[in-house]
Image (cartoon, rainbow, N blue to C red; front, side, top):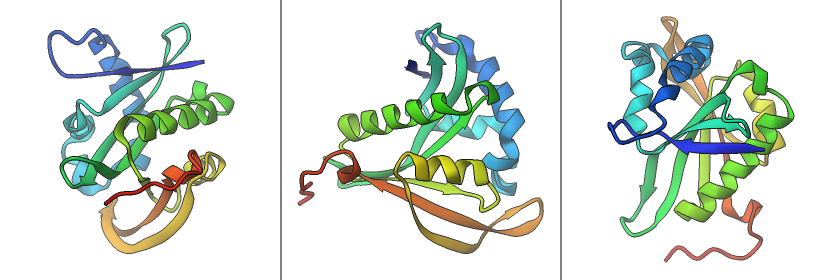
Length: 174
C-alpha cells in the first residue's frame, strides 16, 4: 500500500516535515535527476514544480520517495500531457515502486485527464528504464546532444505512456 501526499510550500501545508527526506533522497540520486544547468539550483529546482509535487509514503507514512509533474501541455481547458520525474529511496525499490508507479499513473490520467505522460531520462539510468517498461511506458526516441552533464554533452531518452494503456476506450481531444 502506498500514499501520495501533496506538498505545497505554504505554512498551511501539513506535509512540510518531509522536506529533509526529500533533500536527502534527492542528494543520493542527483546524478540521475539533474544536468549541469539544474545543478546550479540543487534540490530547490524541483520545488518550482509545486503544487504538482507529492511525497510517496508506505501505509505507515514512512517516506519512500517523491514524484512531480511539470511541463504541462494543453489548451487551457484540458491537459494533454506532462513530464513525470520520480525518485525512490532504495528501501522502496522492487514491487513497492512498481505498484506505486501504476497507482500514481492512473491517478494522473483520472485527475488531470492527460492523454500522455512522458519521462525524460539519461540513457545510463538502466534501473529507471526497466521500471518504465514494467509499468507500460514505451521508448519514443533519443534526443542527441540535448544537454550538458558533468561538463560533457549528454543525450536524453524519451519514454511515454498513453491514456489508452489504462483505458481502452477512445479519447477525444477536440
